[in-house]
Structures are given as structure tokens and as C-alpha cells.
Amino acid sequence: MSVPITPAPIPAAPIVTMIVPGRDIAAFVPAALDSLRAQTLPSWRAILVDDGSGDGTGGIFDHAARTDPRFMVVHHAEPRGLGAARNAALELVDTPYLGFLDGDDELTPNALARLTGTLQLTGSDFVAAAYLRSRWDGTRYVPGRVQPWVAAATDPQRLGTTIFAHPAASANIVAWSKLSRTGFWSGLRFAEGVAYEDQIVAQTMYTSARAFDVIPDAVVRWRLRADGSSITQGKDRLPVLRDYLAALRGGIGVLHAAGAADAVVARLDLILAMDVPPLERIAAEHPDPAYRATLDAFLDELRALPEFARASPDPALAAALAW
Image (cartoon, rainbow, N blue to C red; front, side, top):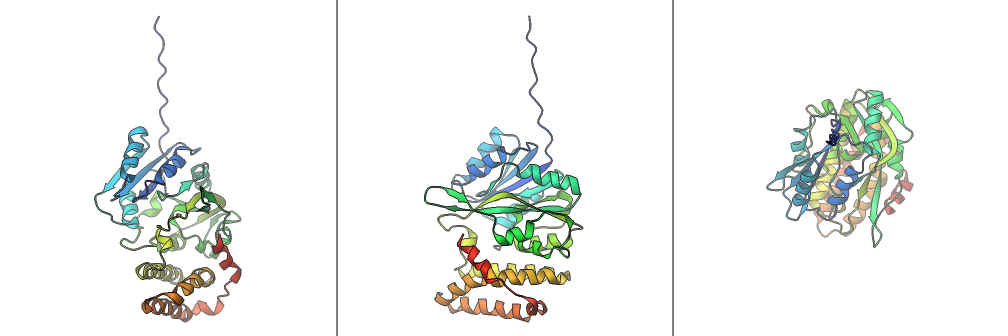
């Protein structure tokens, strides 16, 4: 008697593509990939972009693609930068939704279900969520709490809002806390060859969306590397400072050009409370006078903005940098 063969289940067609770039992050990328595999929503695909890594990152990506058809890999022979890596993957997206996950961070298990479910409910162009910062405690990376500026941008939940109705949303500037309808990215790309490439894109998203959603759920654990090797930890270097200030300046410019004056004020409040004080401390001891001059020129630009008179930074926000 023949035994009936039960066919293997056919995976559901993917509804969301996650773009995962990485360069020389072999120590961290397995956790990022595991966080995708652990999603309660299984109908995803991921485009893994190895941006010219010199370590085992590319091999880890290749192994993931061999063992799970939801992964595909793009290899760059030479490093092209985070913006170029994301842009290369954007050309390959063919699902209704797309999002980003840096290869040294992790998604929370219900992230994709919550994000796609929100957009399916509302019809908005994108949804922005909260995130946690993970720090090394000597033995492991421990996620902290949702920081106050992130909470102000995402809590309480607002569905179908705009930057004019919710100017505090402008504080959530990272690419990887958002999930979008793929069509929304037609003509929208990241700057290449610079750091902090997501800030101008984020403000462009806010000002060009018909409507967007914000939700208080923490969907990403953002890793603050213990060795200080991430770009965000290199602001004592003059080229990084210049890219950083250019991103802040560009983001404000996008909001200002759109007539989102309240959002400009919200950004000024946050920049003056959180971004400027640590830069001032670095400038006070920096051996290159160009560092101080670059920061002072930026501050003069802020003071010249018509919205500056309305700025009222909260000094208590600076304390949040301690965690």
C-alpha cells in the first residue's frame, strides 16, 4: 500500500521586503538575521547587501540565502556606503511594502506584523514606530527604555496624521524605524558618499506623505557598539561632524521649504537640547580649530532662522543621553 505524500506547505507570497545593508559586521549580523527569522509574520523577504566587507559578513549573508529562500544577497566588490547599499536594494523591491534594518540591529518579534497591519488598516504612505537603544553592560547588549524624544514622536498612536498636525514626529529621523508602501519610494533615494544619509530622507517622507501613522511599539533594538565603531559614535572626527551638521541642516531645510514651521521649531528644540551640548564639549578640547569654527558656523545658521525665536529647548532632554 502506498503512503500518501503530503506536499510541503507553499510559503505565503512575501508582502514586505526588508533591506539589510552591512559592512564588516560579522559579529552582529547573525542576531539581525535571527530577528527576521523570528518574526510572527512569515511573509517577508530580505535583500542583504554586503557593502565590500573584509570580514565574514558576506559569507554569513550567503549562508542565509542558501538555507532560507526568503533571503537574497547583493555583493559590492568595494565599499560604496550605506546610502548606496540601500539604493541598490531599492531597485530590486517588488513587494507592496518595504523597510530597512541595519545589519547590526535587531527587530522585535512582532515588528513586521504590527507595521504591515497598521498600513493595511489605514492606507497611509508609511508608519513610524519607536525603538530601543542597546548598550553593552560588560557581558551582553541590554536594551534600554524608549527615549523621551522618540516617545514624543510616536506616543500616543496617531493614524493618518501629517507633519503639520504632529510636528514632533520630525524627531524620528532614522530609516529603520519606518515601514512604507513601496510606491511611496518612487523617486526617493538616499544621498550617497556621506554619513547620516537618512535624516534628509526622513524629513522628505514626512513632508511629502499624504498621511503617515505613528505607533508607540518599539520595533527595533538599535545597537550602540561597545567598541565605538559605528558612525554615530565618531562625531569627534571633523569629516563626520561636517556630514552630521549637513544632515541636520538639510533636514531643517526640507521642513522649512514645506512650510512646516512648527516642525522646524520642534527640530530646533531637540538639536539645541541634545545634539549641540556634546558637540560643544568636543569642540572645547578638540585640537583642530576647524572643528570649533565648523560648529560655530552651524549655530550661526540656526540663529538666523526665523523659527529660532520660538525655540525653547528642554535642558532635561540632555540627561537622556546618559542612557
